[in-house]
Image 1 (cartoon, rainbow, N blue to C red):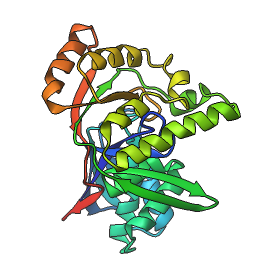
Image 2: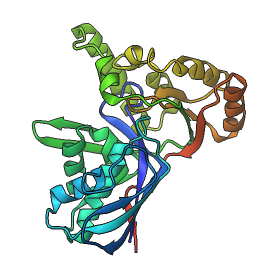
Image 3: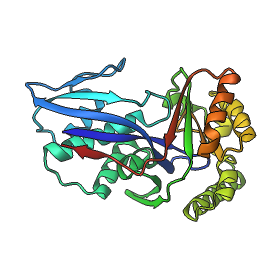
Amino acid sequence: MKIFVPATSANMGPGFDCLGTAVSMFLELDVLETSDKWFVEHDMSGISHDENNLIVKTALELAPKLTPHHLSVKSQIPLSRGLGSSSTAIVAGIELANQLANLNLSEQDKCRIAAKIEGHPDNVMPAILGGMVVASKIEDQYYFQELPLIPFDFVAYIPSYELDTKASRNALPEKLAFKNATHASSILGTLTASLALQDYETAKKMIEADEFHEPYRQKLVPELVKIREIAHQHEAFATYLSGAGSTVMTIIEHSRTGEFIASLRKAGLNDRIEQLKASSQGVFVEE
């Protein structure tokens, strides 16, 4: 059995902690033979190979009596770069328990469990449902809506340095003035409505008008301003900081992608670049 989970690109400008999309980059979990103890085979530095691995820990939270297995993980998703590496591990663990323990979890069940474990629904829900998701929590209940896929390329510029989520969180102010908060919320509301209506001319203006997190985090990711300037030269849809960073994501028409990437290289931006699509496919299993 193999479990596939797509990467996610969350926050999406003003969609801080509430708006994210699945993208076409995957974690692959191969469930192999039973064993005396859990062993997770992978090539990721600093990640546990035993029951302390996040995939196994998550599975055991749902089904503590699971029989240990030999697992093999292959992932295209870089660690600590704002593309949901932790979220995909959590979702893979939920699906592992669901399959091995025959839990028969619904998508809503998986979303609720994943959001409770991870803490940010915009990171995990697109990995479960596929596509773009906007979500919120009221009291102990999560509410979410799926939005139409954005029909453009997603070009991920992935710096060589990690950006710790805690450090990225610490860059944010503890409070926003009421006037600033209401204005930032109006931008988010207009963005969400525009995406729902597929009014991309309005949406592109809203994504780059964030007042919740990017103004405070852009000093941690100096590539953001430079990439956005180049993206404007190529009439891109929008550029934003993916998740907590350090990945900078640009949404652009496919016909312009090649020249845009060439311009990034010409400008001396030589780190990893991935040309992706929004993924309609959430977590899935192949026997």
